[in-house]
Image (tube, rainbow, N blue to C red; front, top):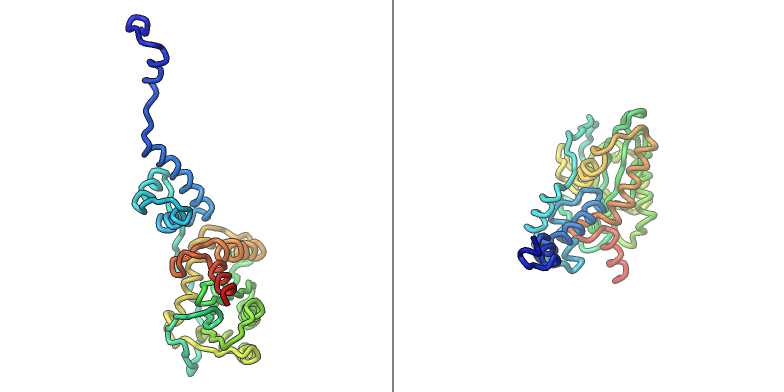
Length: 271
């Protein structure tokens, strides 16, 4: 055919190849970057955070384009929402609410929040995680995982937070009215560490919304996506989530798309 038409073979085969536009080439490159960020985020990031990570890499791209490319790739944020386990706690009254839902801060170690959440395992049943969070950085500064939900778990989490942070000034610790936090043993430790204890009002979960929010994130991003054989496997998974992911790599829109560790490092260096 080429001889009849007097067309060079190279020209004929070149015409057979589809022409790739610059836009298509760009989309292929962006898809590789989007997929890389998505996988590194444990498949948890949606378009807004992937878009922010691309901008931080100096890539000018719209969020709508990121959303479209993610749809073409068939990927989306994989978080699982399930019911919340509401324990029946004995509630006490007459404790002062110092925080009064004022979660604003100007520095680290001004306001801490703490709470306990439930995590189920196949062999060992319910296990318990006590957590202490710094409101300024959203960082988990202390935690303790146990088979028992007693006063020991909350004391250990608080001591770890204090030893790690070494606050130089006055700290407010806000908790609910659970028996562990209103116990004489916990009050003794709070006094020893010179921390001012603030309490949620009866039946007011929003009084401690930030720690409730963290536990919800933990459940959606880790716990509800997994099945833990026993206490030890759950403990390792929670450790990896907090230490390797949440504090070090997970960016937060509330703190300028930084990680808790990054923000704390910036603050400490500028002090």
